[in-house]
Length: 274
Length: 266
Ligand SMILES: Nc1ncnc2c1ncn2[C@@H]1O[C@H](COP(=O)(O)OP(=O)(O)OP(=O)(O)O)[C@@H](O)[C@H]1O
Ligand SMILES: [Mg+2]
Image (tube, rainbow over all chains, first blue to last red; front, side, top):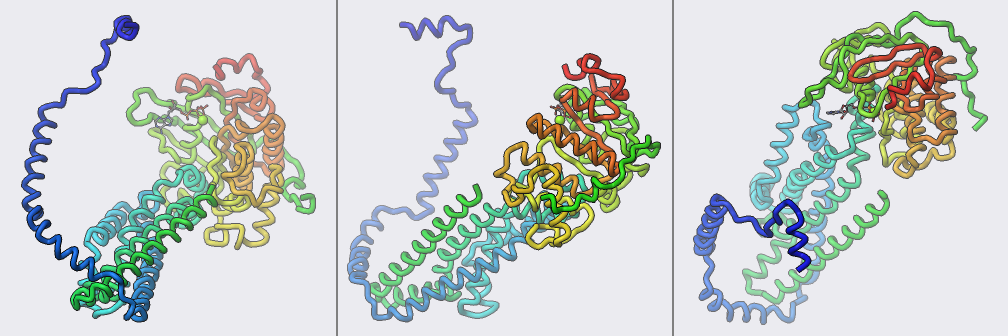
C-alpha cells in the first residue's frame, strides 16, 4: 500500500477527516432540535387539516379556470397604477437615500454622532415591515395610491440608504487620500471620488429596489394603499376566483417583465463599467 | 499641442541658493500600533525653497511613511513639521487644509479616480484652491482650466489620451496623469513617492527632467523617493537616506556616488 507508506514517512500524524464535535455544540444542537419540534406545533403544522383542505383547494383551482377577462379594463388600469406607485416611490426613495447614505457612511459622514443617528433611522425604516408602514400611511393620508407610494419611499430609503452607504465605504481609499493630501473639501471629495466610485453598485441596488417595490406594491392594496391588491382582495371576497386568476396572471406578467428588464439593464451597465 | 502656451517654462531660469525654509522636520518619530520598533525615530532635516532632495532607503525602510507624516496623512508620534515656516502639528480642520493646498503629492500607487477621464482627473488638482462643481468634471469646467489641464497632460506626453478612462490606462500612463494632476495644482512644494517607478526608462527621464526644469523655473521645492541611484544623483541637489529606523545620510548629491550609496539600497 503505497499510500500508507507515504503517510508513515511524514513526521506529522495524518489529520483526521472529521473533528469530534465539542460538548457545547452538541448541547446547542440538541437545544435547537427541541425548539424546532415545539415550533412545529406552534406553527400549526397539521397533516390532517392539509388533507381535509385538499378538496377545497381543488374546487377553487377548478373555478379559477378559465381566467375571466370581464373586468380586464379596470384591472389593467390598477396594474398600471401599481407600477406607477412602484416607479415613483423608488425614484423619490433613491434620491432621498443619497443624502441619508452620505450621512451614514464611515468615510462620508461629518461626525460619528450624525453617522450613528442616520444609521439608526435607516435601520428603523428597514425593520418596520412595509405593511405596517402602509397601515400607518392609510390612516394618516387616507386610502389610495398616495399611501402606497409613501410606503415605498420609506421602504426604499431603508434598503438603498444602507447599501449606498456600504458602497461608498467600499470605494478604494487611494484617490480619497490623494485629494485629502492637497486639502480638498469633503464635499468635493465626495462628489469626485465616492459618488463616481459607488455609482455602478448604486445603480444595481436601485434596480433591485425597483423590483422589490413592484412586488410589495402588489400587496399594499390589500390594506387599502392603492394598486392591484384591492382588486385581488375584492374578487376573492366575492368568490370570483376566475377574476382572481386573471389578476394573478397580470401580476405575474408585471413582476416578470420588471425583473427581466432590470436584469437586462444591469447586464449592460456592468459591461459598460469594465 | 504646440499651440498651447507654456508660461511656466518661458520664465527666466534662476537657481540662486535659497535660505528660506520650505520644509523643516524636527525630531520626527513614528511607531505603528501593535509594533514595537518604530518605523523611524528622531528624524531631522531641513529643505530649502527650490531645493530638490531625494530620499532613499530599502523596501520597508519607511520612506512612504515619512512622506505621509510630512503632511500629516499619517499622524507622527513625536516631532514637529514646518511647511514654509508654519507649524503644521497644531493645525486642524480648515487651517490644515489651507496648509496642504500648496503641497503637491504624487503617490507610489497613482490614486486616480478610476471611472473618470484623464482630463477630469488632472482637473481635480484645481480642487486644492477652488471648490465647487465646476472643478468636478471637465464637462463643465472653465475653459481656462481645461486648457491648463490639457497643457499639463501634454507636458507628461499624454495629451491624446485626455478622454481615456483612468482604469483603461497602463500603470505608467496613470502615473503620468497623477503627475499632471499634481502639477495642475501649481504647488510650491512637491512630494513624489517613487514617481518614476512604473515608467519606462525614457519616460522616467522625461519626467525627472520636467521636475528639474519646473524646480528651476518656478522655484518649486521637490522631495522625492527614488530607487534609481542615478536619478537621485543626477536630479537631486541633496540626498537623504533612511536605514535602521534612522536618518543615516544627509549629503549634497555631488559628494556621493553609486558605491557610497550602495548600503541604502541593500
Ligand atoms: N498602516 C500601517 N500599519 C502598520 N505598519 C505599516 C503601515 N504602513 C506601513 N507599515 C510598515 O512600516 C514600514 C515602512 O513602510 P513604508 O511603506 O514607509 O516603506 P517604504 O520605505 O516606502 O518601502 P517601499 O520601498 O517598498 O515603498 C514597513 O515595515 C511596513 O510594513
Ligand atoms: Mg514606499
